[in-house]
Image (cartoon, rainbow, N blue to C red; front, side, top):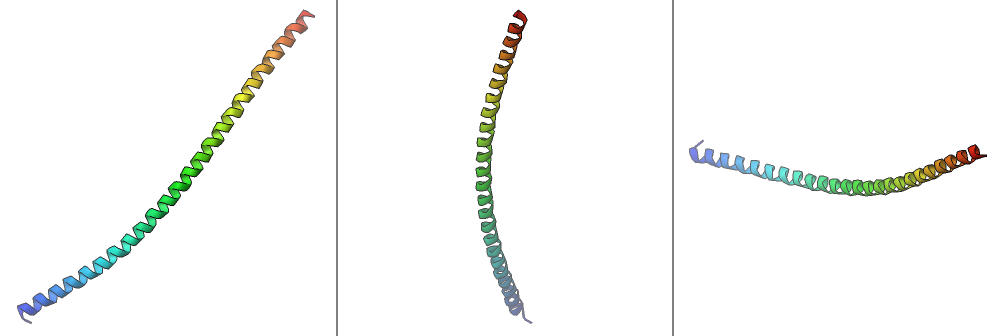
Length: 88
C-alpha cells in the first residue's frame, strides 16, 4: 500500500470516527434536553409544593396563635374565678 493510499485510508477512518462522534453527540444532546425539561418540571412541582406548605404553615401558625390567645384568656378567667372564690 502506498503512502497516499495509507493517508486516504487514515483520513477515511478519521472521517468515519467524526461521523460516529457527531451522531453520539447529537444523541447525548437530545438526552440532555429531555433531562433538562424533566428537571424544570420537577423544579416547578417542588416550588408548588413549597408554596402549599408555606400556606399550610401560615395557617397553622395563625391557629396556634388563636389557641394561645384562648389559653391565656382561659387562664386569666381561672385566676379571676379563684380570687372570687377566695373572697366568698
